Image 1 (cartoon, rainbow, N blue to C red):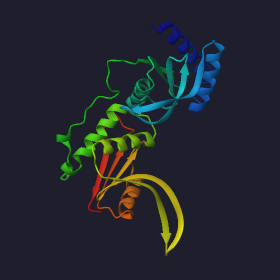
Image 2 (cartoon, one colour):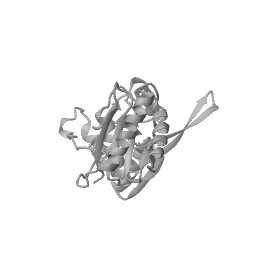
Image 3 (cartoon, rainbow, N blue to C red):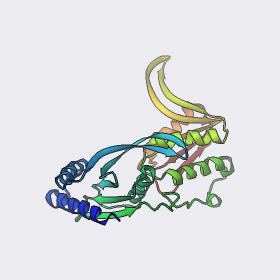
Image 4 (tube, helix red, strand yellow):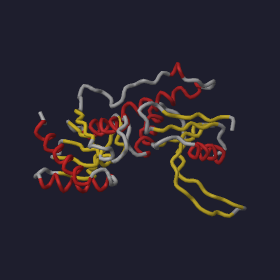
Length: 258
């Protein structure tokens, strides 16, 4: 149905790549592509914002790279290799913005990579639900079962590719719907010898003796986990559960007995 339009867009992608090659950052290709699309009389809106909903709750705004003719979402990359998470991101945006088709383009490889992805309306979620609680290898897993299932529901429903705060708001609504008692922590204060040195903004949840953190990062590396362990101690919690929603499968760490 959109073959002519996607053909025109792909022609623009190749034109930009042939002129700029694989030398630049993503923002350079975005600006060049906007110019090329305009030269071909195609309406292109960069960093177009749309409202993101989790079930029936508005959880924030997100901006896509380029929207062409109010129909096609262009997701641009300048990375050595396209990964499944990049495809999952575009599927998330198609679902979240209710657009019929998207194109994933990567300018970072030896030759231009481009993939056209339709929005399959019959596809209820952007990700496949592959989480199996029975395979969780934790002695205390029953204590966090509801939170794990909750997080997996959020991941499968929203997909990947959004900011931290969107997943945090979705988690907030899930906790509310489950009628779980919790407290939202919005700041930490550095105190040294009774002197206040600084205050920083954070968004964390406290559920009894458990500190819950919701992130969307490349990986839960040693630094992130070390800081989280120190946050658990700072708030006098006994346990901590941290989720990373920048993965196509549920990614979490459970810290206890610190």
